[in-house]
Image (cartoon, rainbow, N blue to C red; front, side, top):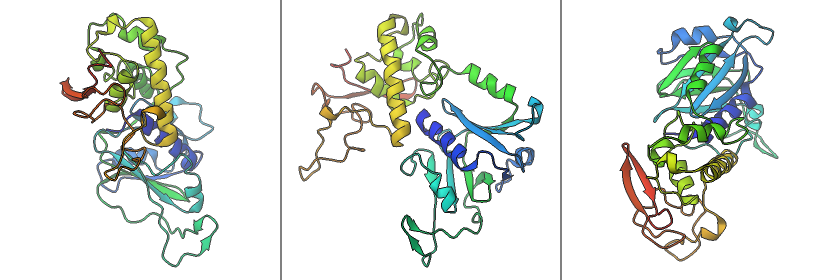
Length: 316
């Protein structure tokens, strides 16, 4: 499942290429026809994310009545993905990093005979291609398109209903939170294991299995430590580390948690291995391998039905 940094990247992508434009909205698959009719020919005012939820805000710019505005809420779940395509102006607006993984892809295709220019082939754009696969929603502007496939949630709601969704979620390290206070409030007093709390979207919005494992390792925290025993200094440090890691994920378009001094993985030929994926993580999916810091064997267990990775020495 895409973690929160990917959803924030998607929000930026939508804002870059569609904000302020009147979009044609359809449901090639047919499962979202009623919702598509509500949004068709509306202006996309902007896009935002909270945790793993993407909100696309529609409504004419001059509208002041909240009832005249609609929000498309999307949760990609395990299988959802967006694809994008369009002309060179649409491509140029995609300025948030490498082609997306984990729920995000870019598609920019030029015909073989397209003329070259300084930035590559000039793209001939004749509108969106025929839908491929089960496209739940298609959004089209004069310069490009976006297709959504396989989301776990896709619905048109009011701004008030969107606010209620956010209110049910925990604080987002990539959101406007001024500090760790709300996070600490939701962790302190809880007898639940810290590793479980970090996966609870009502406690912390946006973190998934990778950020859980890696942030706990970087802070030297036992995944089974009850939340009520975390303490304010350690909790604040954990929050700040999550902010740093997830902001870096937005910039890079992938999760890198290792510090430079701990990136010692080598290829079979003995050459330095690439940063990603070989040197990207401390413990995530490294069970059975030596800890990059202390040399102990990284372990794997199951917590609430999800795989948990940790170092028994660094996190004791």
